[in-house]
Image (cartoon, rainbow, N blue to C red):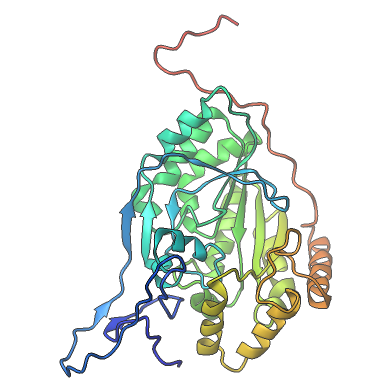
Amino acid sequence: MSPRHPSLPPALRLRARAALANETGRFESERREAFHDGWDLPEEERLLRTEVRTERPRSALTWNRSPDLPFDRSINPYRGCEHGCIYCFARPTHAYLNLSPGLDFETRLIARPGIAAVLERELRSRSYRVAPVALGTNTDPYQPIESTHRLMREILEVLRDFRHPTAITTKGTLIERDLDLLAPMAADGLLRVGISVTTLDPDLSRRLEPRAPPPARRLQTIRRLTGAGIPVRAMIAPVIPGLTDPELDRIVEAVAEAGAVAASWIMLRLPLEVAPLVRAWAEDHYPGRADKMMGRIREVHGGRDYDPSWGKRMRGEGIWSDLLARRFRLATARHGLDRAQPPLRCDLFRPPPRPGDQLTLL
């Protein structure tokens, strides 16, 4: 076990958290550390608990022009994610809130009540042009706090009413709650879902993704969604060189047996503060493999912890990246997951009438 990080108070107890530090965000002018003040007074141990604050959203749709992403708009009902995946590429966004990408990202969450009403206003704009909207591209919309805040449910009700094409990415089994909304949208060609499966090893999953559903439960979610007629793409993401890459073929087989109709993979990405967090995690949980893992990660990213270049950040480059891509192609072809999914329908988009609206005769 690694020594306690100086950013953590000595009496703070962690349970089911992935990050081992809470370093000050990169935009703050001061750095904070816990230190012994010389007083030998016992401190009462305190369990680190999840806190949820709210923000009034000014906009619902987030736009991007990234050439290696298949969507140009997304919706994020929450900031931060209680699933606490140590590898999450969204962790650095917490620094914009003057919070730490470490434990703050997992425990100091922000919900955005009212986002569904803002979304409806944006979709009714005369300048709006329909195209598929993505949910779950930054933090998981079906993380545990959704069970009480129900923001994703409200957003889906708006998207359903507008008959808007929608793509959801999640590892949260709470998505099963919304089958009554999702199944009719899928039947009309308006919906597809991606379920993230990183590993089949429950112990490794508990360390990597401490508050996310275990692998077997995610496979069950794939079965339930596909049983309701919802097309599911299994997302083998991220593939962690030197740790989870030996499982690639077994994961493809498992998700195919669960009913997935397609699969994709993404190489581990370590932007900004994520790299030291993952390095510390590996040294703590897998000290015998940490150097090999980090070395392999640098090999696929051109000698760096992360290469943000378009076209390279999702796949990496070099012999190990090429080998993974070939293994993935062979495995998906063997299990029938190499077929392209049909595009989501955009021709059904219609703003629903509001009370008092003048109806057309045709």
